[in-house]
Length: 188
Image 1: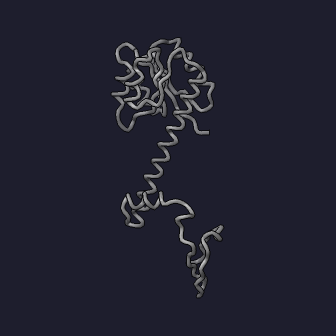
Image 2: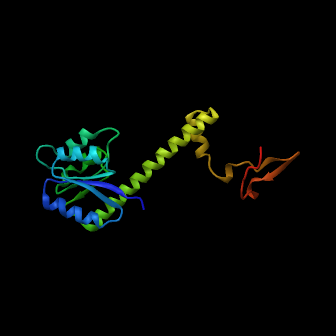
Image 3: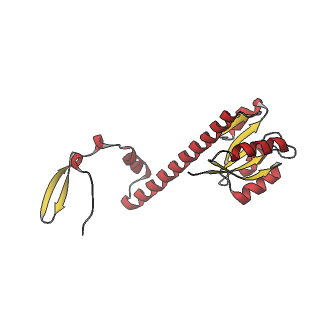
């Protein structure tokens, strides 16, 4: 199973430790650091490059939104805001939070937030793979990005030709595409 590396950031020691205990019970999460303030969070994120940060909003010195603003760019992990205040939810999603969990934290709600983060990561990885595939096909075929994406979205069997030609020695054969179960190259 692919796990999410996570950092917990909360100025309240009891809340931070309680969340850590609950997250360590989940096999999908590996807690790599716990931080008591925004400055510690920035240092831990730079050191560990976590997949996910569970971030309190109201903290002395640097609040959760200031932490996120400092992180904008490639080093930005997914963020789940964990707070006792519901009035920050709109702002949290404006800065692209994966989720927003209210304290006291319900176990089912915490599991839901982790599942949402896993789904978000899978979607990001899928998008990155598609982008790499498009670039590769563009370099091989000389096709434009929109042309390649059209090919990829072109679909399944209903868009395939009915028959293809196969050279077998000196013979040329027409094979129905629906009859093909395996393709293997032999020689040139």
